[in-house]
Image (cartoon, rainbow, N blue to C red; front, side, top):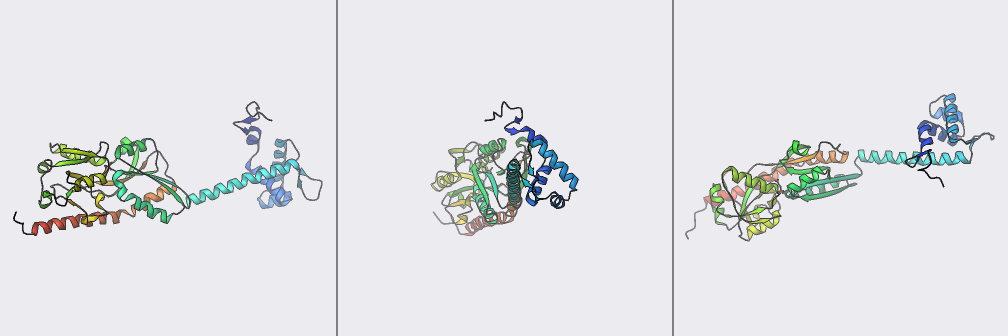
Length: 343
Ligand code: PGA
């Protein structure tokens, strides 16, 4: 058995003498000679002169150090070594043809893989976009990772996904390219029977007197909320920290306090659910989602198609948010117009 490591003719497990001396052109010429049984026809098929075909065939035979064709018959027939070489060339060409098909499929987006990393709160719309995308490109495998802002930043650093959806990334710090996407309005929510639901223009000073349910450290919403209170010299009265928007909504409905969340967290139940949006001065805070990808990584055709596809969903998401806000403010207007009940 040949010990490739000890044999100077083999490098990295590959036969060095073949790689250095056999060209694709020679393989193509030899394949045509054997398949067509003629130097002349091989030259015609490949648009080459007959001397070129003969010279290249001779070089190939010299490299192989064995006769490749039995030229005794009227038609050229491969020798045993020639047949081995012919079969190997066919396999190489078939593999290259397969590669070409796979690449064409990728370019045509019939197959491939998309890894999407989204910040916790983007889970209220990202799966729908992904679902529509998969219907359009059924051969694409998708992986969706949902986690909080700090962990998404970590995934960006470690280059784990193709595209990310998050709020307000710092391009320089993260080494990313970002594209502004749909609105992400921040609202203050309370249980529908909370006394503040009946009030208008609630000041932040009044709001901080209420027990506050906050997202966990590392959450983008928490960060925004804390910065906003700090900018007004206020400290919220945090009663509880929870790692999920849904758990916060339940805590709010359970009367444990008020919370600052994205309006997206109310997208499924709309304005008819058990929580209300409070009429707090300066709210909603207008924020945006961003579609993001690493600057250093070349986007795959699928990732590029996803970015373009997601952008077509911006307008419907924007309209949905505007509609939801309008429903809550209609309710505030109705409540203000209603005569106050005597207690
Ligand atoms: P979060 O981020 O889900 O980590 O709180 C959302 C945001 O930044 O708006």
